[in-house]
Length: 219
Image (cartoon, rainbow, N blue to C red):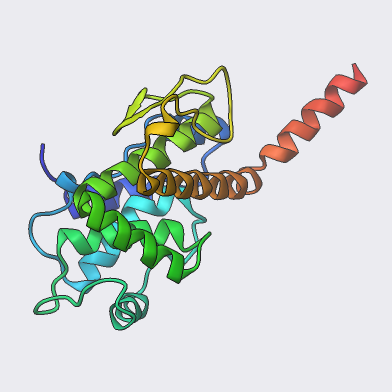
């Protein structure tokens, strides 16, 4: 199947509410962000664009967080961070760039994001750079929440399997990576750690750990 439909992604997003810690860990274990080839082939109008990106990223942020609005998109165009749409329609490149922006802006400045987008696109192409970033975020989240990874190859990166939860992917051939790949991998790691901290508070993971310690002390 080449493309996910807007309707299917919207239905899926509506079910990501009030999950337990165990349920959320399982969600992360199965997490797969849309790859470039999954993005709709038909160019999207603004409301479709916002719906698509929100449905994809909603599980990773707070339920009430404003991920992306029309005014935000227009500002990114004015600042030259993303290209202007043609006939008010947004392409797969727009979707890919805005997905990365929505994940990174919660941790990095727009200047830094703009620089990473520009360098990555020029070096690897938007499609490959976007896919690499999505995979790096997914595997970083799996390592944090599940203590495991799904793949040991991430583009040109060889990833060692962790023995348990860890705070960064262990790259066996890190010395061989290009500066652009190192930068993208570091950014993805930061994005994943930000999500992890927020979800620990949202899901009450700290409270659960504290209560378990108290029960153990009482026994």
